[in-house]
Length: 193
Image 1: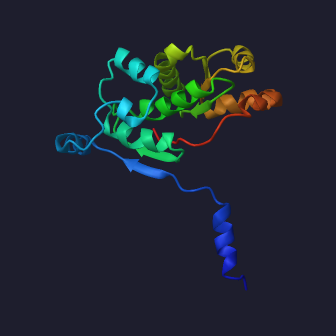
Image 2: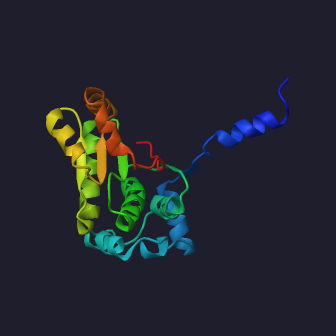
């Protein structure tokens, strides 16, 4: 029979479970009414250039999912954010990625996977808009577009790659050396869509 220490050792090898954040518009309203919510993006710990980028894009106050996810992500926690459409989930995971990228702008900082090419295109658009002050290089690797051009784009080591699982798998299968592009990429922020 296994010793009592064996389960503890096995659990120590497992990555920590992500913090799960579930939001509704009612939670956002209640928190704001109570005055308990951080009032600005600066209050969340984001770099000033990102605070300015949010302001320039008309994002004046963080939403509930952003208030709960951004500080945790900046602290290095894995976060699973579940919120309504239009609640700001994309910014909730993109802003911490861009914050870290601003500290160390070399190599691919993130690979964001989306289930559809339409959503991947939207995510890439948001990353580009929020990361414009940094000179963000973002590649959308999605079906329906020239895969050779996308492979060449990966070799230029964009800061952020937004892709569909099938397209990124095909690109790496066709050229296994492309996997090296992601050597510095950290795994962490997870958001279901």
